[in-house]
Length: 230
Image (tube, rainbow, N blue to C red; front, side, top):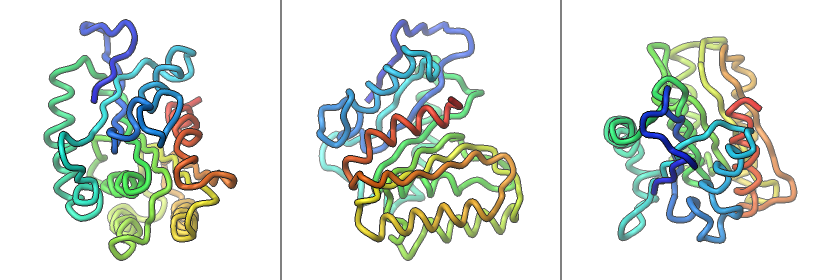
């Protein structure tokens, strides 16, 4: 799924930042009830038109036939991460006028939020992931024997408390979600705050009146404005 900004210019000086969204079959254009306001593409368009974020290309990742999100986001996450970083991103940078200097943004909800955190923790002392901005919404971080916590531990062992993590992470959950979603997200927020990573812009938000589905729209609005620095 591709959404180009209004007035897209293939010769645009410097190129356009790119927002990648997981579960695009549900989240991309508002055709699903999961997310309102024209989906993620509509929200990006509205925010850029009002000048609150820069004009951006939105790339949605979905499925042609049978949905394979469980395989990709939970079980074959290493292979899926390699697909994003080694195949999809280079393809997008070749085919579109992208800004390869500014950080790419990755947005995910539920298992997509879980995978977004996994992607964030691929940072190491030797460099960063191809993404620099992350919006992780309502993931169950207890899955795969608490994999996101184990990945954070690996990152911490690589760079240590107070090490440099040059990126922005917006972590959100609905307060009316199932307990495991809420508590694991809040526990992750406490852990990240305790690390005091240098260079990391981190914000966590619990939307107390929202559940697993209703949290998506407000979290996307707030997360995009925050990671782009409003």
